[in-house]
Image (cartoon, rainbow, N blue to C red; front, side):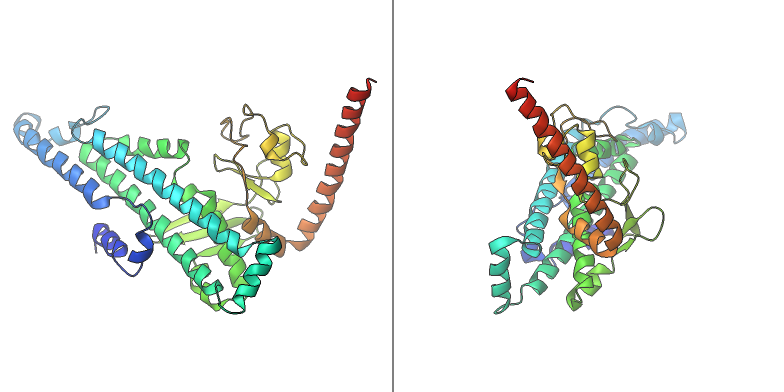
Length: 332
């Protein structure tokens, strides 16, 4: 079965009521745009083939843009990708908030579970979110590949880089990593309904480079390195910057020149990511709670050692900070 048929079957299948609330790639419409463009270019190729011995197709559209479809194609696809990324992140936030609720809300949810089992509903919604983001990511990848094939260009490949720069590349979203950690945590709590989904995810912390792996349809596999690029150790209290790179909280604070107790929100807008050097990525940093819980459960001794060391460092930083503030106020 061709992917177009598979994608339409997915959109109108058993998850249709769920997908009605979400944006998705208009794969069929974008494919029609390319088909129209190809048919118009086809007549041009037929006229040129006599002189170029069939080489006209390879020369066709080897320019910066195609006026026949670019105006509609890339603007629509960018909007759709942005909407999908926004829908996915907001729904995953809500889902994980229910799973790791604290304080009074946690007691309310526990009381509610006495009358209704919401855990199975949460697991099912998580599975549908994984299907949602992977199917749309594959649709974007295939339609861009088709664009490059029709136009004999690399504009589709360049568009992927633009998506990464705008932080809407679906399969590089830190929320997908959080969702994977959520299912691995769910599986360890002996929940039967999570077993099928958690098989898509695996986490190997025994190697020199700890990694989380996600197996996707269409023979795709994603690997997320769980090593902090600053301390070169397994992530501790992991945070994702808005550019998508993962760091230990203390390492990220050090890179942003702020103290641990101040947090990443206190970082200057000019502070840059240590990897990609993008500025302004700390204000919207996200604490990866599910990933932190997974690493804490699987690396208990390591986590305990890092926790003791970080608390000692935080106390030292706090003391130095308030000593300096006192000297400033008193005047000596």
